[in-house]
Length: 300
Image (tube, rainbow, N blue to C red; front, side, top):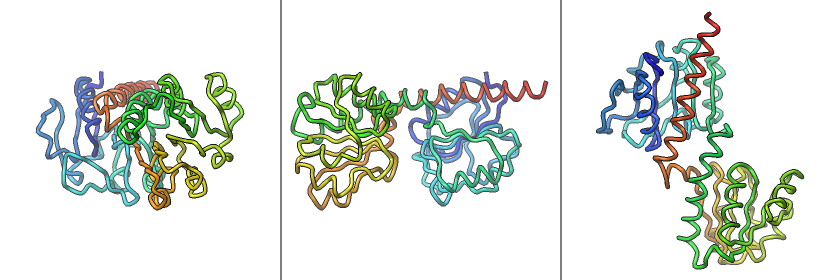
């Protein structure tokens, strides 16, 4: 249980509702920022503007999966009010305060560094990423079905990257009958791709591999699907970019060439927010409990 623990939840989307629900069940005291338009009431939770929050008593701060913008802006779908996470807010927190977010950027990294607070990026954790790959794959399947006029079965599909998402996408599309090639760089990934019964190739050879591609799915957050690569694609190719913004695709050139290219980060929150929210909620609950036990151990 998280009885009497003070937690501020700043911004969020439909996934965050599952986090709020889980933490209130654990008896935490929640302060919700950016939820003034949320009709649902949660026992043990109060709504505040960010400048009304008493950060000096907060044991944990939970930010959206998207973290903050480069100027500190925090997204929420439950308010029209602008929310800015100012550096001084974190400096006001107790030294043991732990900040949680899905991802980070230079602004948030600097806030954490200057306040000397502990920080966990949830999407860098294997457990969250692997669980999240399930709704990500389902969302990818949905997008491919919606935006092509062929079946996945028998399609020539390229998956770029064999990380936690790439592996799940490649395996599932192969099980659906697609002819899957996977682009990677590491020799151990080539071995794993071969073991999975798929066709490996080096990312540097991508422009030579796309000549008959129906679907290209990118999971690598770097410029991978460049203009040079897009030039070699058939006009009917669908590109689905699952990497975090801005993705790894030259969307401007794809549009110019008439190639349909879709940037689709955050698919779990779009196609299955309840499931995605429960994944985050369960991991957060466990991490906060471990944090409390760790502090108690240091005190004793």
